Amino acid sequence: MFGLKPNPQSFWKWFVANEVMLFDFELDQERIFDKLSSAMHKIDRNLTFEFGPKTPTGREFVVSAGGILSAFPAVVSLVGAAPKLERWKVIGFRPRRDPVFTIELRGRNANSDQVEFSLIDNGRNIGIYLFIPDFNESDVTWKEIGYLLLDEALGEYDVETKVGPFDVFSPDSAKPGKRFPFRDLPEIFDKHLLTLESRAKGSSQALRLN
Image (cartoon, rainbow, N blue to C red):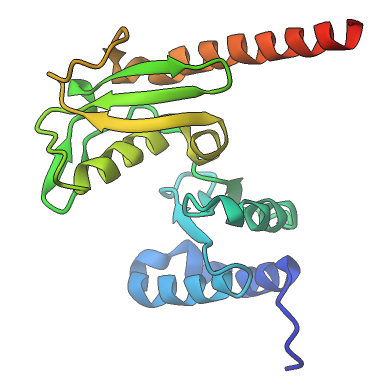
């Protein structure tokens, strides 16, 4: 009424009041998703969401920044304010998915079992190259598919805060570096990240000693 921006508590008050409707959103998905999007956009216009499937213990509700780094604080604030909900597990940022299946977008598709990757460690961060069959550099859809694959494998938070340069190429590209099956990306990336962070910590300690 007086131009005050809704706070996270106001969203969760709305969520609790509509919990039954949201839990069974499949009954009227388009209308319910519109209502939920409207409520979330009052907090931040970039916020989005995902629902997990129903299970005997309830279902997941994922609060996402839609890959927009500037919206990350809104995700943290909203998830941090979540009340205890008996049938819901509230998750901040899209989590890693295992396994990653085929990604389809605008008539293009990439089977993760046929994708390879290589890492680029420049001493500051770790970049990733993906090599996708049927890739065509003139079709921007493939870059989007590559990003979606990355997001599924590493999760929204790590992709936006820990991944360096990223690009997509054809498997016959002459890019240097050892290639690995895409399914191994989370494990290999995490190991390289630990090494990078350890080197950075060691350098910081050396500077303090000097």
